[in-house]
Length: 303
Image (cartoon, rainbow, N blue to C red; front, side, top):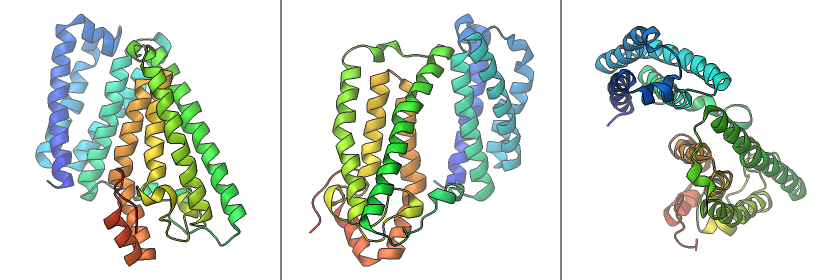
């Protein structure tokens, strides 16, 4: 199935889900309170049935990115309005999450219908554009790599989960079961097991590859030593396990979802571009390396 076909299927499913949601809103006080709080649904039902449900269905039927763009704009505006209301009133948390997911999905479908595929080029700019690191001493490569590692770890494993925990609490969308044993202990174990893998990968990248984890300062040499002998992307693997572990430790289910979604996005959108860059620079040695070592699951050592 082509990407535009997948986008159309998504929009069709979204139209059906939107219609069922409105049936639930008028049929159940619990669904109304969880998703709209004290908002009067009669104020939204007309515009939403036309712009969201109808727009999604029409965009799916006609493969029209313009109609999908209108749906995306409406969904985004409604998401922002619900978010402001939810944070102020500590209500409608599930509605905020559902509309945020619909906004992301609608935007992805719109871009896919517009371009014929899901565009990912916007990501590879600035510090995320692939460029070999400038020639320098190993000490400088190591210092730059460790600094990047500290910044990423603090941002993703401290700041982000704390913000998500506060977000969940404010919108009342916590999953209380995660705060009880054995989940926090399991999360700590996962983080402690994965962290040495991430650190070792960073050190090997700096010392053997003469580069850093940042795409704009990527390795100058092909690295098949250390953790890279067993898995092609040990830093990504470690990052996903660390993120899930942190989510379990903090009891944040949104952190866990973000980690899984990030892994899927990286695998589908970023990995092909990164591997194409490596193949262009290193040629046959990299092709043989890919044949011997899997992307995520350890296989066997490179000969």
